[in-house]
Structures are given as structure tokens and as C-alpha cells.
Length: 209
Image (cartoon, rainbow, N blue to C red; front, side, top):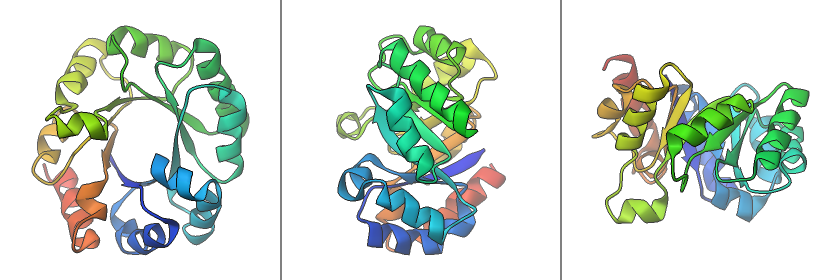
């Protein structure tokens, strides 16, 4: 399992956090708020500073998949997100861009009515990962990604799943038991008094469940 840190602040804060958590995380996510603040400059700067880390751009592509994914890949990203609710043509365009660049696409299932049925379609179109994602607003109402993650694992078997949405030290063990390939943690790391301590603890939980 891989630990992904979601970085949603400004670029200076992002670089400071990455400097201390980089030994414990596998994937650095340029979160959507960071993309809005800094654009692809953030991707280029992180790539220059951390040349070996896997870099994901959470663009949540909804249209113009090939062009928008290509922008992120050209800036040094390894994985780009497309929304599962996007049109098939958009998804196929993003996948085409990824294949041309030797990179990957993660399909975000947020707001997808039937994650299993749509997940099968997204995988058939060439997406590399399906992400069960409970968004920030839904988390405020107490929602969790666990039920959807369990259903996808049960019904789709050994596909590459990612999971995001309010995961922290208290819940990561339950999440890890469902064997997602990627576990995304945001605020539990980035808002901690000592992000490195929390990232190390989460890494240890994954290595020693």
C-alpha cells in the first residue's frame, strides 16, 4: 500500500511540509485548491525540489481530457485525476494523454451513482486506479468512504483502488484492512502540529497493521 499526502495549501507551506514528510510518503498530491492558487507552477517546483517522488495532480478533469491531462504531465506529474462522472470521451482523452506520456490516470468516483458499474467502465477505458472519495463537504455530515471501498473490493476483486476522505491515525487501520493500493491523507498530516510525526505514525501503521 502507498501513502499519499494531499497538499492543499500554498506553495511555500507545501514545500515546507514535503521536506519533513517526504521520507514517509510515496505520493505527493497537488490538491485542487493548490492547483487553483498556484497552477502548474506548483508541479514544476515540486518536481524540481523532489525529483524522485511520485507526483499526482488532482485536476478533477471534467472536460477536454487529453489537453488538460497533457498540461500536468508536461509539468512533471506522474498521475492525473479525471472525474468518473465525466463523459466517456473526456476519460478516453485523458487516458490517451497518459499513455502517450507513459503516465497514469486515477478516476475519482465522487458523486458517481453506481461506483461498481461505472468503475468497470472506467477500467475498461484504461484508467489505472479507481478512487473512492468522500469529499470535504460530505465529511462534515459524517460520511465516510469505507462502505463504498468495501463494496468495490468485494465486487470488483483485485483492482487498483485508492481511498480518500477524512482518513487519520484512528481510521487508517480499518481502511488498510480493505487493501487499497493508495491511501490518501490530507489534513491529518498537513494540519498537525508536527506533520513528520503523524506521517511516520501512519507509515508504521501500514507496515505493521
